[in-house]
Image 1 (cartoon, rainbow, N blue to C red):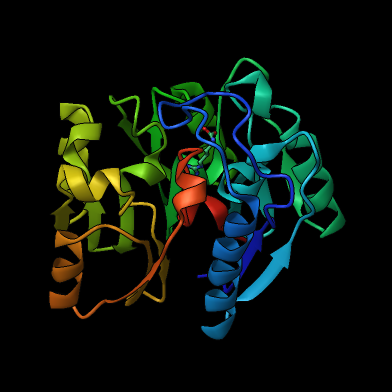
Image 2: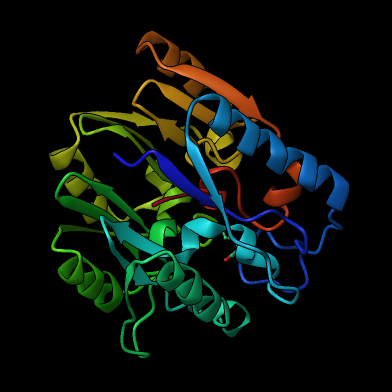
Length: 263
Ligand code: ARG
């Protein structure tokens, strides 16, 4: 697994439009947002993660959610085709950054929607991918093909859990936390087939974005503040949980994993 992440400091972060049910226009405290983001960055660096940064562009408030830039495997990156026009200009900015860093960048045909690591998790030669709310089936199929990964398509069915990383978090290739209420019955079947130890999140923990945790080396998890029951479940499994308050980013429907792209 990579030891490098891409982050974007929330210099121009705000909620100025609404493209998911969490974005109800609650005012963002910019100073608090910056403090919360620094806690994420500092903790990753303390753990020995190499942190790279991209500068935020003024009129792109959601650029802080770097997980949505694309999906990376080795030197290749499939860039996102954002569903909503508000975020579409981000793709050019991310493309320039990846090209400058020497990555081979791929763009999907315009008719497909694909939101990168918001909807995809790569584990060895498999790609778990959510579709149906933001990314579509055509988008995840093309991305898996370019990256030469076996696709496990998981249809999402709940508007509040609009990206896979809001309802599914892989701890290792045997174990994941997930919110059952976010998946269709056939997606649940696939999850059971591929992951032996599936830990369900209750609605309280799911709504506090427990699944939007950053996993490091299987036994370290950075989790948004608020979830309760899942912390005990992880403790039983020897996973060490560190909490970070992400109140400001939740106003945009995002949290720690959304702000972190492993590259
Ligand atoms: N406001 C952003 C959006 O709706 C939040 C994105 C969160 N990112 C994620 N990977 N879940 O697009």
